[in-house]
Length: 485
Ligand code: ADP
Ligand code: GLC
Image (cartoon, rainbow, N blue to C red; front, side, top):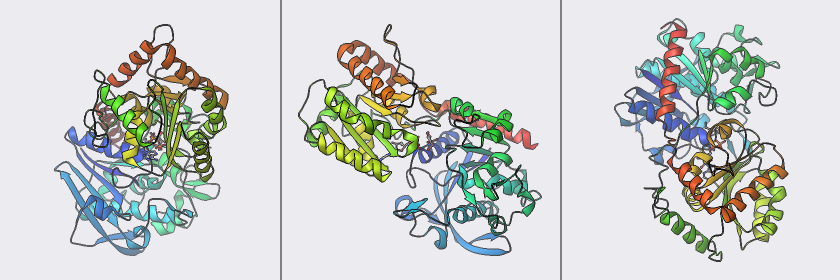
């Protein structure tokens, strides 16, 4: 099969969160199964240097409405079956990050990503390379399935089937009605049972209505988003499309997340040889100026700081935790200014046992996860979550709220038998989180055999992408059947 993967993010060149990792790893895994996969993304600032692609000689003609824009296409071929394409267009992408700068989201994000979407289709014609499947990810690419069913219907790409994956339902992408003129999409789709919502174009909903098949990144989240508690107003659309919606859990890209050969650690370990993990922990403790403490557990957070992740609950209980529990805490993240300053303030207050790092730092994220004994993820909702998977793979037991992919991937500790791979709590309240952290901490001190047993079990789980990518291939076949091709 020929599969075009269309996404605003892809690791390691453009990343704000797990979407980038998921897209890159899925593409690699499908290509390994001998399908022709090409990933398309915008050429943001800095990618030319980091990805070193090669330019295609002819300019890329992008047909938006009645106007033709000239852009440039860059290609990075990893091997015969895996290529990355970058769309260069100064007006929208030069000297710009993915969605936002220090002042907030770019005001022209809908236009930027509509341009990108149209450019991908025109790039396919120009290469020429006509995929069987166009796989779109999240709101930025929501108009892609609409194009296939409208402007492209009688053209070669009209035979391609579309699959739309929801990584996060919170981001909708509202745009004025005029965006359809800009996109060159016929105005008749401006209906509430198509692209319209509240008098505007709703880019996410557009994808949900028009794609042949929908997926999201865990079975539990696929159920949750059909309810008003998690549906962000789209629950009725999702219930309407329930027969075409599948939840498939993300996996780990084992080539970049592997404790046996992780260049960020300067050491290695596995489930049977944990001395390397202890050394990483000691090295970091020394670097952070902490007293070397034998058998004191290290708890970690590696996360975007936003409402979704529930870290405000941790802020409320952190002073109590630091006073009442014998543990060390390291926090790495960035996002909401309030959370950044609160975590910094608390780290200052408890500097002997607590550190905060503000920023996006891939090397440090590997080190923190490797050094920690527990990872805290109290998400209010979590479509899948990758960090808890990385943590389990690196022998750090996740403490998670029972929601979305966290509920699907972390098995709760059973105090009787010592089974489980982490600590799961139900209510999104500071008290429930406090109890779960206390439970984890007491397990570490009072039931060390159970801790070790869980650690080994977590590290031995098969979390690779193979199984999940096979399921995506089934969805692609199913989408083609639905399209009748
Ligand atoms: P989300 O996509 O909602 O942010 P995930 O758990 O799926 O959540 O993915 C988060 C990804 O981003 C993981 O790869 C995690 O290691 C990475 N990450 C998050 N915050 C940081 C940070 N501050 N520095 C480095 N990596 C980070
Ligand atoms: C989103 C979700 C996260 C998921 C990631 C990759 O950012 O918040 O739960 O793991 O996408 O699918």
